[in-house]
Image 1 (cartoon, rainbow, N blue to C red):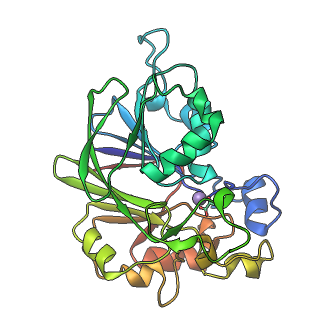
Image 2: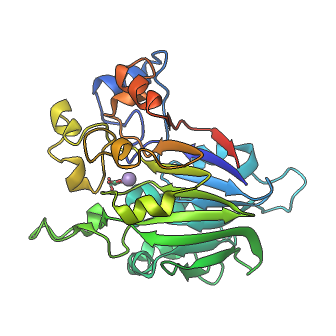
Length: 310
Ligand code: MLT
Ligand code: MN
């Protein structure tokens, strides 16, 4: 299977539109080793022809423009797309807003947990995707299911969704009880195993914690694309751009005793790659000591357009 990371930044992208932090400035002014990145999304194909998107970012139009494989074939029908399905890992803005750009009465299938499908059903703006043309299909947890396109034809990929520790989408938080909605693993945030002919890739762009069960699940994977939002838990506070810790945002950090590098050390995984990287994360600078440290630990740092053949 072919994987193409079409968006490697967290919500806000890199540079973020209103951000004057040194890293956003470096990206904006074209500093060497600091690549701009669009918001979190992955495209996967079993054959290089039909594609399944994992998350639909607000930058999807730009991402399709940058990815010829996702454009209509020149000899195709008058209205056509190689995008056959979209699978969501949660209801966050950076993962669902791109659905609105996929209107135009084009068939494809939409997969998400029932919880996220309910959020979409409650927000009538998503009716621009007529469910008669874009069927909405609930993803069961812990079950491997074939991904079918809008007409019910096999895409060639199978997925298994599993709950990970995460957080309800920001716009659904209950401000009267800020503790209530985060750190949960009820299915508002999922990880996905993508399977094709014996190869397994895991896509987990949001995850608050790694426990023994998750380690066991990842063991032996061909590839792991994992939550690389923050380098350190208090990074946004230290940078002066926000008040939230990674923990509060439902994101594990790379470094530290309970960080992703330590928690996933020693596992047999073909390639381990950080995705969903926030614009404050120092690894975005390829010349930084933090970038070097993460690479030394056996991890790769995703960039837009990064391709993997598994
Ligand atoms: C996140 O990953 O925490 C979200 O994208 C934050 C947001 O919705 O802005
Ligand atoms: Mn996000």
